[in-house]
Every structure is written in C-alpha cells, then in structure tokens.
Image (cartoon, rainbow over all chains, first blue to last red; front, side, top):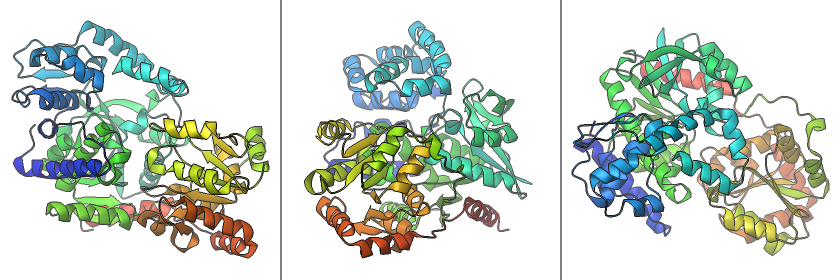
Length: 154
Length: 386
C-alpha cells in the first residue's frame, strides 16, 4: 500500500531532518530518499513489485532491502549488487535466509522470484536457533562470532 | 467493555528485560488490573500474516517469570489486521518499530476501521540524535514516528522534554499533531530484597577497594562513558575509583581499548559485565556517587534507581536529566570532564557538602507504577470523552 502524497510529506520531512542531523555530526545516511519513501506502507509479507519497479540503482536497492528486510544493505551487499539487473538483485535477495524466514511473497512481479534453497535451509535452522535460550547463549559469545551468526541468518 | 490491544511481539522474543521491555511489563500488569478495559496481548504471526492472540493470564505470569519457554502464552486464535474491533484501543508501548508490521502499513488500516490508536513514544532520540543510532534503526523509527504523527488519536510521552521535542518537529514541518499527554513512569520496581550472600566476590572486592563513582547502563556512544574515563585519566586518578557496569554495546571498540590499556584497569577502573540485580544493587549502595554523563535519555531510569538507593547523583545538565532529577542532583556542563571532576573533587574534600547532597536524596519516593497505570487509564477514558 503506497502512502498518499500528504503522508509522504511527513515521512520525507523526518527523513530530511535526520539526514541533516547526521551531516552536522559528520555522518552519512546510507539510504536513498526515494527508495525509503517508496517502501513506506509496505505489508509484512505480500510486497508489490509494482511500487518499486520504476526505481533505479541505489534507490531500488534501499527500497528492496527496507521493504523485504527492514534494514539497509551493508557494504558487501551493495558491492555484490553493483551492475546487477533488478531481476538479478531480486533473485539475490530471495536467496537470503531472511526472505525465507519472513515468508515474503513478491506480487505483481514479472520475474519468477521464489525463496532460494540456501535461504530455505538456513531459514529452517533460524527457526530453531531463534529460541530465547539459544539467543541468550549466542549473546555471551565474542563479538566476532556473534557477527558471523548474524551474517548467516541475514 | 472496551478492548485494548497491546502488541508485545518484541517482548515475546526478547532475552533482556531492561529498558522499554521492562516498561511494557510494568504497564501490562497495571492495565490488566483495570476493570474498565479488556486487555488483549497480541503478537505478529508470520505464518498467518495476522496478530496472534496471547493468553492474558499466561502473559501476566511471564512478566514475573520471564521464562524462556513461552509457547504456553500463545493461543491458536488470530486477528487479521482488518478485523481489530471497532471502537477498541490499539496501544503501542513496545519497541514496535522493530517489528515486521510497519506502523505506516498498520495504522491506516486501523484508522479506517475506527480503532483508536495510542502510541507511547518513549523518546525521539532516533529523530533528534540519529548519530547515536544505526541507520537501519533510524529508518524504521521514522516509519513509526511518521505514522504516529499522522494517525494517532493521542500520543503518550513520559516527559515534558519529549513532548517539546515532538512539538518542535510538528512546528518545523507545519503539521497539526495529535494531542500529546505526559504520563511519567513509575520507579517502584518490584525487586526482591537484596541478598548480600548472592553478590559476587569480585563485586564486593571492587566496592571494598575504595571510594568509587558509578555508571550503570549499556555501554554505547549515547551514554558518553568516554567522559568518565577522561575525567578519571586527566583529573581523578588516585583520588577515587571508577566503576562502569553494563553490557557492551556496539561502536565502543575504541573506548574499550582505552579502558583496558589504562594502567589502573581492574585496580582503579572496572568494567562489570553480566552483573546480577544483587550485584548492581550492591554497587549502587556502596557508591560514593552515581554519575550520569549521557547525552540524551528517554527517561533516565538509572537516575531514579540511584535516588531510590539514596545515592548522590551528578548528571549532565541536559533537559531530560534536569526534568527527571530536579533539585536533588548536581549538574555539570555536557562533555566537560574538568567541571565534572571539580564537582567530584569538591565532594571528596568537603564533607559537609557531600553530606548535604546525601541528605537531599534521603527518603526519595518515586512515582509508582500504579500511578502510571491509573494515568494511562484516564487517558484512554478521556479519548472516549468518558
């Protein structure tokens, strides 16, 4: 569900404010504004490709990551997606564990985008590993190992 | 009886119940006691793409036990987003911007179905101080705040400082905001009597090593622990010890390197990780002073925790700390380690002054969670003009 023009103005106003605050503190907001605004109002599971099909480059990537995973891409993911077509990017994202864990269904999409096998397997493992007891144990591990675990289920 | 829906999706997967989750649990207990509203706990269920109804009594039990085994709380009943009961209240007080159900998606549906929307905005740090947050968290937070501005029937905040910050956003964007009500948080956490036998030997040794100033809370950039280390290293070494208790947050690598490389590490400066409630209680009770250099806080519960234990407080003089601590604390200019050190030195050398500060926190009675619950119920009634 795309946000109305009036609603978008509020989200845009907040986005601009945050961007300025970060710049004042010598930080950068690694998110394209159009990409961010496009994914406002996205449903948890059924996500329409129609809404994002006209976006290009960084805007498309920001929008897809936020819409699917509610996070921005990390450096390696941005590099991985460089020079890929929209279809290839979507295929790459659909192979991630989060795509499977979240049960995402991409609608109005001309490409055949289904959760990849790797994502499905890791997704099943995540269902087991996400128990509070196991997560508590993981939190006691060194930061490097925790990051590796996060990366696996990303 | 009118229904209140409370989405506790994040609490249900949580492992750490301080901060917002602790507030959610305290509020849940008080709202549950109300005879005027029918409280319904819900969580998002991805398989059904709907809210799952939780067993109210089991969830209330969980707020005490905090058990890892939570399946008994879950029922098979689900409520599609479009079928939340007309005239009910959707009360958001959990960290809902982290859940899969974006409020920019949900709130318009609820509004259309005449459900009253009442978000509890703990703070707007993610908007006004995004430099202390992850970019992704900020983006999700904008979603929640934007939806709250656009669709809430009433916004609840805990301090006047947060209300002012929200109004400033409204003014800046020239938009009309919903009513904003202030409901301060309680400070009477139901903590079991402290048992000194359970306090770790290491904690007792630290407290016995000499006078120390204490900071409690997750170690993250926004809390400004680096100022304490700077004060110690430049001005206070050999005069007083420093104890920092809290989980290690992200973005603090440089701080920990400086901390662990200090020649006084584990002799005059300590980092206490994984402390139990008894350990923390012991550290508070034996501290010379609690020092709170944080740049920005939602509510600053550690200040209240210090007051309850009658520990003198020295805090950064920002709006939120001044509002919560009032006349009881001493304040220093944010980021001024010299001024902070001067205050500590002064208290160390002037026994009368220190005694007076101790006296000012004696007999402190915090606001109670029952009062917070009553205030919230009043807000809900007020929405209906009752």
